[in-house]
Image (cartoon, rainbow over all chains, first blue to last red; front, side, top):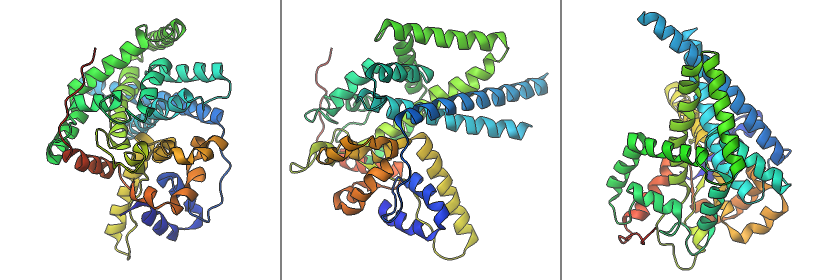
Length: 74
Length: 308
């Protein structure tokens, strides 16, 4: 099945979900209003923020799991 | 608490792999094309800093390899370093499709592949491969992170929760991205522009089912979840539209706006009107790779050129 056929069929879902399908497929529907385009610096800033947040969550979660594992072994 | 920690580790792993591929294949890519920040010095500095965060290829090395990749004469051929790298991994013309799939799955989980990739990434970041200031930045950043983690007794958490996803997860996602990006080492039809003929559009989505069978819808939601993870980790940003990057005929559109920052808005109108783009588009990563393997299997075997 080709992506454009799938994207057209995803138009059956509520209008509010269409932005999500556009992001997932990378294909905007022909009648979809273009959103405000992000600047390049916003992309850099967002990526850096996601890195910091993900690193903090990953570190805290894994450290906690290591603590739980070492407690159950001792 | 254990459930939350497992969930946190999974979410963080996906996010870190996303950041790794977004930096190494989207931000660095456009920065080396001069389409990152407008100021060239700021563009270079921010690109180097981002690549240090995820232990990715330095700017100068990336630009050297990527400029070679864009040359129409060498694009996706043995003279293209990325294609040559895949050749060395075992993706060789004239190999049966079933064998190519075996090589593919073996590569994904091969300790040898991961050790080599990790050593290469560490060498590029901590050896002198580019400028002195980048090397100093790299050592400074990672030494201070390691020292802080050791001082606060969270070094195991840093290694397993941050570095492991960035290195091993990043290797897997980058390999999937590379393998599904072009039809490497394949001879294109003579009448089609080489870079377009050997590129894929990767627009991920499962076809929604008809009817009201709950189990069918649950299965479909699982496929959507897999597509979301693949979109985040393998083809983040404008990588779904990488084919447009190689379509020289439409370059006027690219020059008029920073299209990579919202490729769907910039290129979708073109897509709906273009039959060829539709033919060369796929709705899954493995589907795109399979199309490459089918073409690669019927190619005549080639021998690598002598390299230093």
